Structure formats: structure tokens, C-alpha cells
Amino acid sequence: MREISSRFADMTVEGAGEADPARTRARDEDLAPGRDGGSDPARDGDTDGDTDGDTDLVRARAGDDAAFTRLVEPLRRELHAHCYRMLGSTHDADDALQDALLRAWRGLARFEGRSSLRSWLYTVATRTCLDIVGARGRRALPVDLGPSSDRAVLGDPPLTDVAWLSPYPDTGLTDAPVGPDTRYEQREAVELAFVAALQHLPGNQRAALLLFEVLGFSAAEIALTMDTTTTSVNSALARARRVVADKVFPRTQQPTLRKIGDARVREIVADYSSALERGDTDALVALLTEDVTWSMPPMAHWYRGLEAVTDFAVRVPLTTCGSWRHLPVGANGQPGVGCYLWDEGAAAHLAWSINVFTLRGDRIADITSFVDPGHFAAFGLPASLP
Image (cartoon, rainbow, N blue to C red):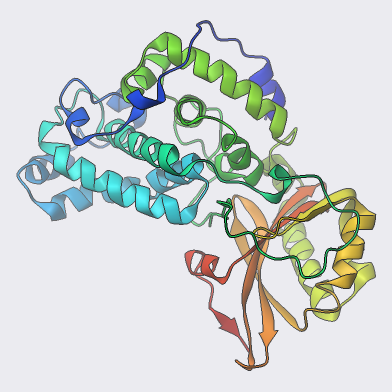
């Protein structure tokens, strides 16, 4: 596994100029023959050539919505993950995928099969996401808003006017690449550092990078998808690689997680949960790196370094919050926990935050606490615990 920084910095792309964002708008009429975009069905591993697939495609074109559902169902999870990478929000990904599939359904009669159905659906989904990016802008984390705080900020109010990045449940993701010509495993491509870095890119650069590096589309195929030129795609790729290489961790989490093993990862998560539930500062500190960071969107303040993080932990979650309970989760291809905080009125521990851990070796180098009970349903977690 090459380091991400090398993965981008060592690559050069010819071409200049960028795609006009206005040309990336997805419209139903764009889905006509000759605008399918995408790649070779054999390369994509599609089942369009199978008898059942052909039959369902014919039926779907004739208006059979059940046949259309059978066609898209095997691709739904990966298309949803693509929408999340583009948008940085599970909720937005839900909306984008629903809209994209509706557009595909309406335009299916004009799909001639020059590309695979999978590639065509990615084209529709990408254009749909570009519409949303243009309307809503990018998602942020607290580290994007300002410098870290040296001491705990008590009563830190949530910022409701910021579009925050959200966590992504990695159920169904595997360690395999999305396609044979890609540079990323599925879990790598939803890691927090990578998705957060993508948010710093304009929509056209974000789409070009994902289609090329994660999905294995060629520059020519991306140009068809985005209704632009290959030269513009190459320029967008070059710019996107520079930004991402500057913002992501030197290595992805996947080699680290494989090296320390599942048992040790479970132990780290359990030890973190136990430390908070017992209010044990020493046990918590023993799990952290010297340069650890802790952020809590939608709160703006965040902390860097063991001294600042310890001050925050001692003054807030370990002492003043009350009783905690935790359930382990997989989020963004990384270990994490669902945190539940005691509520006297409900006489129960209520959903509070999804905490995602970034590990360096067998220590926690970053904690991102997504404070919002609304995240729990996507992870299949209960709203409360005893």
C-alpha cells in the first residue's frame, strides 16, 4: 500500500484549464444515447450481458419498476457510498441516490447500452451530486474553521449555520477495490481524512478524482460523464491531487488496522469505552498519542496535543457530563463507538454521539465525536440504552 501523499504527488497529468461547473448540471435530457459515458462492461464486471439482466433491462425499459429495482439493487450500496464521498453527508447521499435513481428510471428508455449499466448509473449519480454541491457548498469539520483551543471551552454552543461532515456506516464495505483499475479499497475511500479533504475541492475536481482514483474511469470517460473535455479533466485531476495530498494523513487506516489486528482494535475501543464509563483519566490518556486531536462537530472548538485533550476530557466528558454507555461501531472504515449519555427525565442513556477513531499504531491519534442522535439510525443503533 503506497502512502497517499506519494500516491498523488508522484503523478503528473498533462492539460490545462478547468471544466465550467455550469456544464456539470445533470438534466434528464442529458441521459440520451451517446451521453451514457462510462466504461467497458467487461471491465466493470457488470451482469448486463446475462440473460436475466437482459430480460430485466427490456422489462424496465417497458416500464416495469420491479425489473428496474432488480437491476439497480446490487449497485445501490456502492452508488450510495459514491454519493457520500461527493457530498460528505449520509443524509445528502440518501437524497442524491433517490433523485439519481428517479432520473435513471425516467431516462432508461434512452439508454442504448454503449456503456455498462453500472457506468451509466454512476454518470447519473455524479451529475446529481454536482447539482447538490453547487446548491449547498461543502461540508466542514471544526479543524476547518479555526485553530485549536489550549484549554477546555465549557458550554461550547453548537454552530447551526455550518454544514457539517457526517459519519458514514461502513456496513457492507469490503477491503477490495471498487473496480480493477482503481487505487483505493472501498474502506479507504470513505475514511474521514479522505472525505474531509475532498470537501476542499470544487465539485468538478471532486468528481474527477473520485471517478478516476476510486472507480477507475478513464479521463475520456470522465469527460463524457461531466460533459467537458479530456484536457479539462486532466487539469482538474492534477489540481485535486495536490489538495488531497496536502490534507490527508500520510497513510490510510487500513494497513494500520490490519497490522494490529481485529482483536487489538476491539480492545482499544473497549478500553476507551471503559475509561469514560469509569471516569478514569489515566486509562484514557494511556490510549492517546502525544499529538492527539479531539473535535466535536457541531461544536466549533477542538483540541490538539495531550495536554489540551486531557484538560478537555477531565473537565467535560469524564466529570461533568454524567453516566456514559457505549456500543462499538464501524464508521468510515475506522473503529468507533456510539456514545449514550444518561438523561434523568428519560431515566435512560440516550444517543449522544458517534465517535470515530483514527489510530497510529495501537494508539488513538484523533477522535471525531459527531454529536447528533440523528446519526444513530444509519448505524442501526438503538436510540437509548438502560
